[in-house]
Length: 189
Length: 115
Image (cartoon, rainbow over all chains, first blue to last red; front, side, top):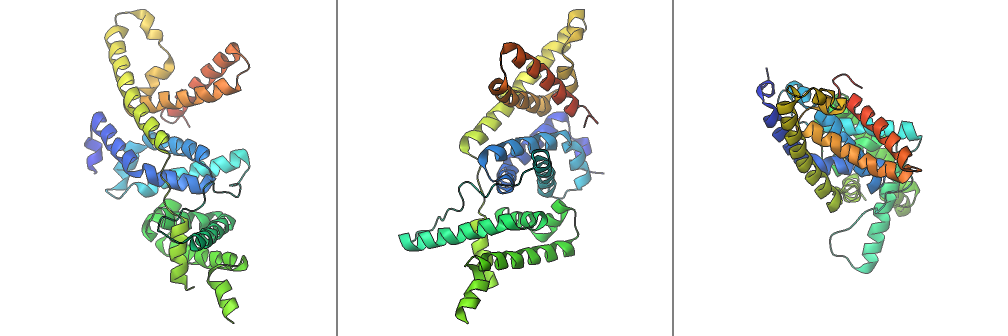
């Protein structure tokens, strides 16, 4: 039996508030890369926390002490799926502010680097949904294989394969568009 | 470029995105304020409900949503929708109709097993 069953309502609310503060950034990042713009990402984030609150007590009880981030991301994942189904759309190209490079660079390398990152982002948008999501969870949220597996409802092994294939496919896409390892190997030949 | 380098660039491309500051602040402030508001309102209702039959017919939404962040999120959500409805409504009557319909939908969603 989990301790959560003994939590009072104020304690549950405090606990939920902590979860919210800890993972607001994760949920927002995930939502942003799924829907491609800040406006819808805000809406998706808000709905995710609303849903999470409704089922929080049960989730806490059933988590058996495991982190709740995969559960939160799974809620966002389901809501995002509804979002596309209801509105029959996918992200328009189009991540609003593409990538930002924080390290100092010369103007030339900055532009080259930005273009390359934009190519990678555009490639991510071309991937099948499950591969794209796995990459977002791994690289934007820093989730490990086990967390991603829980969020996607897959086994650890299947998740590892999914990530591997996603990276390989993305390398191929970026390579075809003139960047990435595949293109560089072609140029070297 | 090796696969490891490619993964590093992928990590740079998919950098974490912070929510706009005004969104985080707005959401958090709304939760806190509305939590307090909902708690106060419920306490006042509990004191008077049994004495005054007129209070027995309070809006169903308030009763089913209950206290705490659930109520806070409920009101927050309703407010966000209000902004959207206001933009969509042709006139005041239309806005009122949309508001009542929306509040009822939200209360149903928050009821246990209300999905």
